[in-house]
Each structure stands twice: as structure tokens, then as C-alpha cells.
Amino acid sequence: MKTIILGLALLSIAMAIEKARFDNYRVYSINVDTVEQLKELRKLDGNSDGFEFWKLADVGKEADLMVPPHKFADFEEMAQALKLNYYLKIQNVQALIDNENPKTRAVDFDWTSYYTYDEIYEWLDVQLATYPTILSNFVVGESFQNRTIRGVKLAYNEANPSIFIEANIHAREWITSATATWFLNELLTSTDPTIQDLARNINWYIVPIFNVDGFVYSHNVNRLWRKTRFPHAHICYGTDGNRNFGFQWNTIGASSNPCSETFAGPNAWSEPETVHLADYLRGISSEIKIYLSFHSYGQYFLFPYGHTGEHVGNYEELYAVANKTVEAIAVRYGTAYRYGPSSTVLYETSGTSVDWAYNEFGIRLAYTFEFRDRGNYGFVLPADQIIPNGLEIKDGIVAMVAESRVRGIL
Image 1 (cartoon, rainbow, N blue to C red):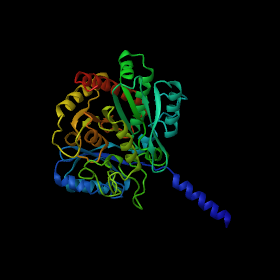
Image 2: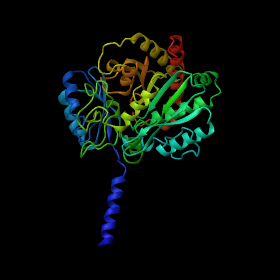
Image 3: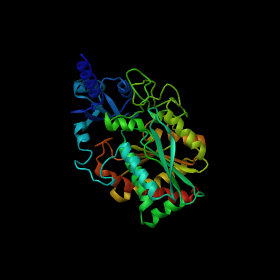
Image 4: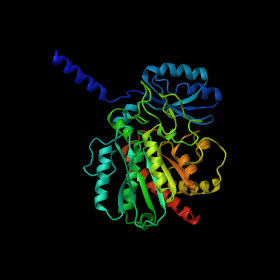
């Protein structure tokens, strides 16, 4: 009997940690042409029936919907009934996941693969030991599952103005932590005078993995996990950390359904991660001149606000700096970014980190990057695009800093 019980227990553990698979799951791109279409599509969000929006757009924009094999017929029927214009963007999601990383990983941390929570933190420790006079560790706080949310500060001169970068608030967006660490490495090692200028004359706060619990879960269990891991509901775990900040919380572009990918939480600041970040930022807010949040995908460069189409007070300034940034991003590979207020260029949101930081501290420049690509890979961007993405984002940041200096921001 003991042997049977032990066997069942081990089987339960194995089943609990078995990785989710997405064999033959498809991603369709849908043109949302009418309010009625949008209303019906939104009913699929969080219905726990296998549909999952990778991008839920507003009217006049394009939504990306992942459909499981057992729902193909239902999707076709719905598309016909709603007269949807759509096309197949991804044939087999699992095939992308299987080919995301190279079959053989390099021994060194070289950004040819995606790295885990432990590997990234080990790399940070090496950098801290290598550059002790200019690089320091800081702790944002502890996650719900008691993981440490770490960051590093690069500072040659404490009197320098600062830029704050947070990445991987959405767990499945692995390109964001990869780009954050790649960019930090550039600041530490580049012999390019332009990059050395950025390192020596600006202080950089970089949090490479903000949603640490979700990030670990996306590596170990479900590659497409987005939210935190706080169990607010019996069936559906997690909150969208980028809908949980206390500015315009859950007013628009967020959900009260715990099963939705944009669940805002039971209340603002329900997640320990968002509370800790807010508390940390309050202590350094006077230093921060630019706030950047790294996301994927879609190739957007967005600024406040998400909850309204009304222009903010320094709209022209935000727009002008964004224009210079995306122009520079396009030079190297021709990668085209769309830019402007997030509410009009992408979709409406509320409770985001960028909008909260901009409003709370009066940070003049606060932006959201949505990295590569336009949806051919979506969240599962191949690792061989990490360095190209990093290079073009570096070009954009160089231009952003240059224009900010012209305008007296830095």
C-alpha cells in the first residue's frame, strides 16, 4: 500500500510539472472592423476554453488570437457569422517553441539563447564582481513566491541623471530580459565612444526580470504564461502586473475576470511585485529623467496615456523624442516601429507601470517599447534575433538620449 501511495504521489508531481504543449495551435490575425465584432471577440477573453488573445486590438486595428485544434471549427463558424476578415499567421505554435532556442547552447552567456532566472542572476553576479566600482546590486523586493526581484545600478558619477528600465513584467516576453541584459553588457564593455558616453554620463537602473515568478513558470511549465502567480481564483492564477498599478486602475483595457490575460487584480496594488516596485521608485524618483518598460511584440514605441486619447501636457516633447528614436531604430535593419500614445496607436489600457510613473512622479519621458516582431513569431521570437533586436534598440536609445539632451531633459 505504501508503495502504491508513493507511486501515485510521484506521478502527481510529474503531472504537475509537465510542460504545457501547444501542438497544432494556430494564431490568426483578425481585422476588427466594427464595434460588434470587437464586443463578440472580447467574450473569448478569459473564457478558459482554449482561446487566447496574443493581441486584443480596438476597432480599426488587428487582433491576434491563438486557437487550439479542438476549436478550429468553432472559430471558423464565429468568423463567418461575424464576417471577420482574418488570415492564418502561425500554423503551429509548438513548432515555434521547439525551435526558439538553438539545439546546442554555447557555454558562455552570449545572447545566442534565452536564459533562465538563475542563469541571468548568476551573470549579474559575475558583472557585479567584475565592475565593483561602477556596478551595484539593488533589491526591488520579494515576489509572491519569495523570489528576489533584483536590479543593478550602473553609475560612474552619482550626480548624473538616471534612466530606469524594467523588463519582463509579462513573463512570456523573454526578448525583454534578453535585451535588458544585452544592453547592460554594452554599457559595461563597449569601446564605442557613443556608448561609453551613455555609461559614463547617465546612471542606469535596470531590472531585467520584474515578474520573476511568472518568468520561472514560463520556463518550467508554460512557455506562454503572461501573468504573476498569485492565486486570486481557484481555477485561474495570476494578475497582469501591467494592469495592477494604482493609476486609473481597471477603468479601461483591463479585466475583472481572473481568467483573463489582462486581469487587473482584485484591487490596485494587489500584487507584491507592483507594490515593491512603486516603493523602490519613490525612493529614487528625483533622479529618474526617463522611464522605460520593455515589452513584446508588435514594434511599437508608446507613451502616455493608455486610458484616454487626450494629449498629455508635454505631448509634443514625447512625440518628438519618439520620432527620433524610431527613426534611429529603422536605420540598421529597416525595422519599422509605430509610435504615439498607447491608447490610440495600440489599444486602451489602464493601471500600467509607465502611465503610473509618468503621472506619479512627473517623469517627462516615459515610454513602452514593444519589441520585434509583427507577429510571425509573436512572443516566441527566435533566439537568433536577440542580438539584432538589441542592436537596433541600442541605436534607438542613443537617439533618444541625444534628443533628450537637446531638450534639457538629461
